[in-house]
Image (cartoon, rainbow, N blue to C red):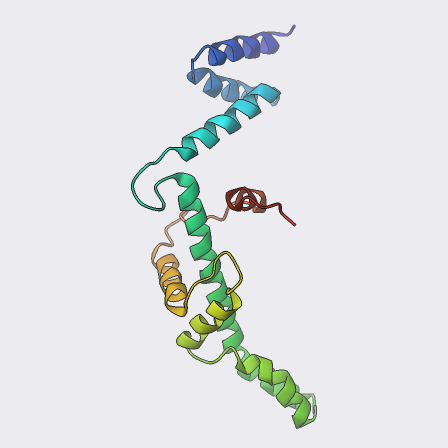
Length: 178
């Protein structure tokens, strides 16, 4: 048995005996040597899951898991509004491009009919986002979408809205990823 393996074995026994700092030491040792025993990953995952379940405040977002899901929903709504606003901004450009291609007016009207649904104002963008998200986990009224958008705009401090990976979001929502 190598010295690293013996040290990992000591730390494992210490952690099982109740010394929580042994898990930190095992993670540090794994980082130094580039090898991670399975027990370190399993126990670290369990420790994170348990610590995320502990309430850290009051209300709906009292624990980190609920807060992360709430942040993700706000960010998803914000992203939808931005996409719609971008689509609104390019409406005139798209129309001019179709006219330059000398496409018949009837076909242009049919193509642009879908673009008109996006509207031209912020209120139109919020209403369209609300319709688009009707059957989605981030659903909400136009007013709710607006509040989420403004909240993300206000809270764009570095690191505040870093999106979790698809697997992390799937775990939060308890669904399987595509």
